[in-house]
Image 1: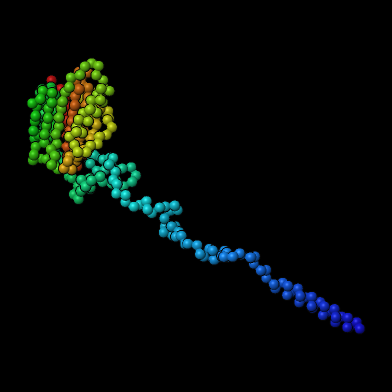
Image 2: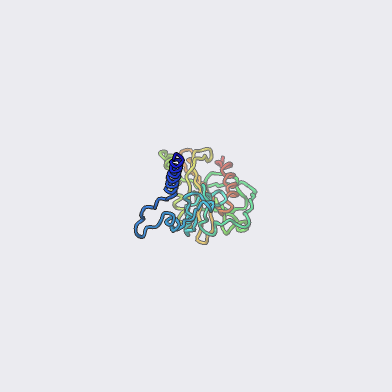
Length: 266
């Protein structure tokens, strides 16, 4: 009898264990997705694919279209003493073909200097020899480069002028006259750019000078410097050097020679 009860107990325990295992194998049914709803994984797979620009080695947020050529050029370029365009930062963009780098760089020029006497102005100085002299005007002395020495179809010219001034004339008046002189020169050219005036003595007297860069209608580049100074509070002295732009550095040697030797005739 006891064995019979023990057997029944074992059978009940076995049945209980089987029921528990059967319940644990059941999986939970997913919640209703509604009509037409796409499972999340399918939603992800159906999304349009966007290329990752970082796979191209580009910085995040970089727009490749920004490199496309707009067709515009910078017209406010600055230029160094040789006539080449210079910028801060980005690569310069030529404004026209004459500013393109030349295949053969211009050679450095050398000059032989000799003394000139501008008797009507009461001045003497040293400059490149062989220049043609025009002293027909009482207040101006002009030197023009001979045809045999002309570079880039532009003859360099040097002029000295003396203008009487009154005792009230000061350095501010000089700056105004320098600006007006440049405005007058501008009318002779097809394009024009001048720079900021800088202080510099001439014949030991306080003065200002300004550089400019211009082009003629045929594309010839011209560079120049205008230097003015008040002499003995009675005269305004004007020194103007104009030269072919690609040789500007060389011709500034002539300007330096004149400035260093300019003096009154004793």
